[in-house]
Structures are given as C-alpha cells and as structure tokens.
Image: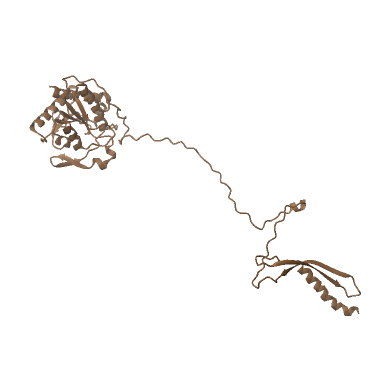
Length: 366
C-alpha cells in the first residue's frame, strides 16, 4: 500500500508549490482600466503515505479581472511608492532610494563686484605738437599807445588762422576765391615754435592787446574771429569782413616759420590793385607807418625777407581781395630761438601790439 500511493503524492506537492509561487505575483492595472481583485487560496497537501501529517500552504494572490480588458490592453507595473519616514532605528538606518531622480538644480555662483573710479580726461587742447598755455578768456588791457585820436575810425583786426583748423581739414582745404581769378585753400594751420607754442595763439593774444590799445585811442575795432578755439574763417571771408565794415585800416597779424637763422618782422601789401590807385597808395602808407611803429619798439626788421621791413606780394588772398587799406604783418620768426621766446611771452605780445598800434595811430591820426 505504501508503495502504491507514493507516486500520487508528487502531483499534490507540485500543485502546492505552484500555488505558492503564484501568490507572490501581483498585477496593478494602469491606464488600460484593468481592475485587480484579491483572493485567498489554501492548498492542502496531505501525505498519502502512512496517513502522514497534513501540510497547508496559504498565500495571498492577486487575480486580474479581464472581463473589461480589451485584447489590446497592456499591463503597466508601477514602481512602489516610497514609504513614510521609518519609525524604528533599524528602518532609519536603511536609506530610502527615490527611483525618480530629483530635478537638477543649479548652485548659485557668487558674484564678485569691484568698484572702479574713472577720472574723466581733461578736455583736449587744440592740436599741437606740445602743450601750450590756455588762451586768455578776455581782452587784456595794455597801456594805450600815444598819438592822435581815432574817434570815428574803424579798424579791422584779423588774427591769422584759428585753434581748431588742424582738426578740420575738410573745411580749411576747400578752395575759395583768392582774387584775380585764382583760388587758394580756405585757411591753413599756421606754424609754431620749436617748444610747441602755436602761431594762432600768438596772433590771437597780440590782437587782443592791439584791440585794447586802439579802443583806448577812440577807434571802433572789428575782429574777424571772436575766439581762439574755432575753425576759419576762410581767407575770402576775412577780407570781406574788412570790406563790409568800410574799414579805414585792416591789420592782419601773423608769425613766420622760417629757418632758425632768419630773424625780424616784415609788413606786406598787395602788388596788384584790387581797388583804386588811391587805396593802393594808402595801403603802402599804412605799411610804412606800421613798420616804423614796430621798429620804434626796438623790434628788428627782417634780415632776409622783403626789403627794409616791407614786402610787396601778389600771392596773398587777404590782400588781393581787400578793397580797403590793408597790410599783413609777419611779426617775427617763431623758429628763431630769440624771437620764439619773445613771441611766446605776454611781455613780447604786448610789445608787438604797441608797435602796431603806434603805426595805426600815426597813419589815421596824422
């Protein structure tokens, strides 16, 4: 009997084993609408041999109700939900791993700031090769030249060039009428001393001293420019200012830039007659009076250019376009060390102004 029933016991054991394995499997319905149901199965295997003891296997199984599932439905197995914080030390010791990685966060980068103090550059002086002193803000008073009264007389003073000519070649290089069918550039930059003192500055400061002297003598003075930091005016415009003012005398002030050995002043007039013979003769008379006035201040006549401090020329637009008694003065050579020092100084500029004023007063008051 024992041997007969032993083979029959094996299938029961296998059945119990299979049921036990199936209880560990569970299915959770996903988006397909599958509904899980739970049942408890008891498998009892009884040994048939010799009326042995009964073995009972109990398992909780999850059965899937397929009554509402379509043939295309799929089963999605979701990861377990993280458990709540552990209540026992042992549970706390075991770290809980969140299967979903946290969103990436960026670590703030510290911002380092630095305060920098920027000192604005000083205003650019007029373009010259070396630093020069600033122009005077107002006309400077000078002791009036002695001589006759100039009441009712009009004198036009033309300080040559201008402070910003060099910065505007598009203006000063433009060709303008120069008289007798010729043209010349609107203006030029002028020269300077070897130390960088510019001619336009000498012209302007000397003109202001001369303006003060002639005004003190009773003349009405008209300037062809009103500052030392502008551009132009062009040579034809300067001449027209004298013509429009119906000037009794026009004085154009310049400094020369010859080789270092040349020294002394010279006074120029036009070789041609832009107006009448009378104006031509009066220009020559004005030139002689100014030459004598400068020489009377102890200033030397040119040792190279012109003759006896006078020079008649045909190439200067300011002279060729003027219909009033007009002279142009090269007061000295700015490349000569002795004259450069004199022309750069306030005392020297006053000296030139006094000499010119003496000549104008002698011419107009005589």
